[in-house]
View 1 (cartoon, rainbow, N blue to C red):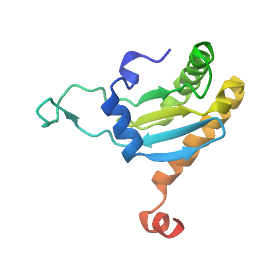
View 2 (cartoon, rainbow, N blue to C red; view 1 turned 45 degrees about the vertical axis):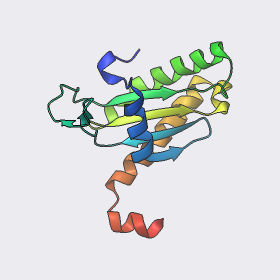
View 3 (cartoon, one colour; view 1 turned 90 degrees about the horizontal axis):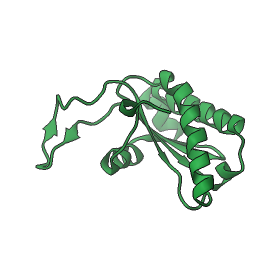
View 4 (cartoon, rainbow, N blue to C red; view 1 turned 30 degrees about the horizontal axis):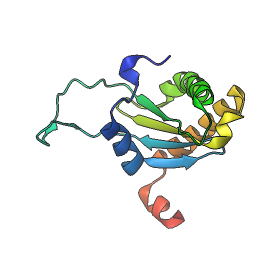
Length: 139
């Protein structure tokens, strides 16, 4: 299991990563990666600089009904959580990751999920190191 401080929990946190982050699609999952966490917002809409959010990387999971019934979804979530726990050290402090399972994840083995996760992380982390001019040319 992931420690509580390493998990995304609220909808706005997931939304920020999915809308603003980089994306890498794999056969069993889509990774959404945001290298720098945005400041938290209060109820009044103001940024809170020292809100006490943990400095380490965080991860969240989206496993929808298209993946399968409740038993299948929970199994896939457990497998993804275990795989992300092993790879979380690769992410910089302050980074957020959302892993969205695709329907193929229901029949995938843990080894396949780990391979797809590692390949997806390789892709989003490699994009960070490419110069921005090269990134815009290749798009």
